[in-house]
Image (tube, rainbow, N blue to C red; front, side):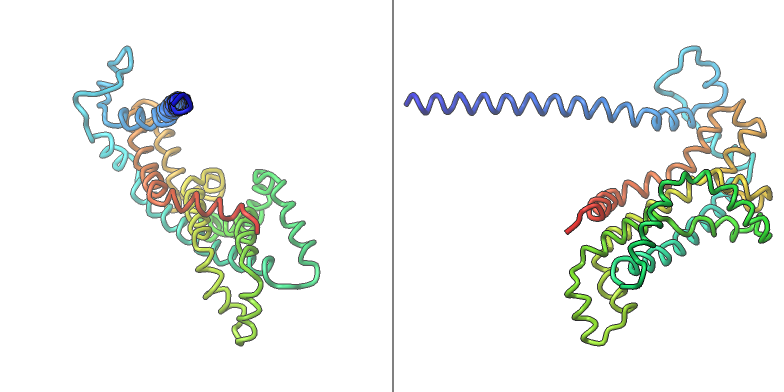
Length: 291
């Protein structure tokens, strides 16, 4: 009887510790979520406030009783934001598609094919990750200029079609596939390309989805390179559009309209991440495991 009472006391104590630990964890996570999400809330809130209401607030309010969509209308009329969105969509889709082809073929070569100097080549390839991307911007700019590709989609796309990190991530994922599958496929007369298409790509689909989404986000947020190689409004991306709104005075004077433009540009990526967040996490964790 005493042992039973003692066991019940220990069980209640352990349960109390679990409850206390969960309270601390969820309190911390709630505070962290508020800190992370508050800027997005403030951005959306500011975008639905009128110009007069926003500037009339001596102390900023965390709510508005008279939301308006006039700011969204204004940003589409002040600059051709719709055209910038179309250009960004073309740039993002084309760059991502070409990058996937390059990445898959390069990762397959390093992971499965045997050729002289493969390990040295891959080591040198990884060494490129140590070089900041800003250092190659000047070289890329001079190359694109000499090829007369400024103010063209080709000039925008070409420097972004290869990524050492994505190739490394996919190569590690490909390397996890047992060699026996490859040898069995070769015995059956399967070509390397068919093996890649029928076996490796389906198995590594989560990582490919992750790479695709991350590249889409990277292209959509691209700022420095588009600003360098485009000065023709017909090829401006949304990053150029934000700068255009700011430079023509609208963003400096009308903060709510500027926030509306940021919302329009940000929402597609937020929705994309929310839809595929589980696949992104699964792909990254899968690519980081070995064995």
